[in-house]
Image (cartoon, rainbow, N blue to C red; front, side):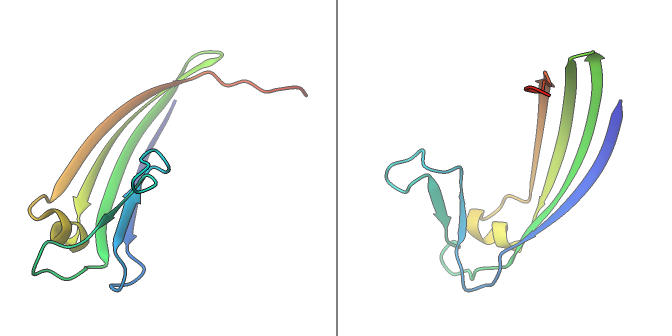
Length: 104
């Protein structure tokens, strides 16, 4: 069994760029990326926010691993000027892994 608590902080490289998010080429009109600009009257802010992750993993069987994770994201000024109002996000995930190796 393993347990971890991790923290992350996120910034834009400068206040001269737009915030780009996405998962890749799944949308033909923008090649899968969204360009986020501030709401009218606001300027780009570099600090996106901070994240805390709490993860628990355990081995159920010899070849079956489970992992569950809870994350909380504290939005910084960089997100608040784009989405105007939101200040926190929470999410949870669970996964099962079947590890194997090919050849030796």
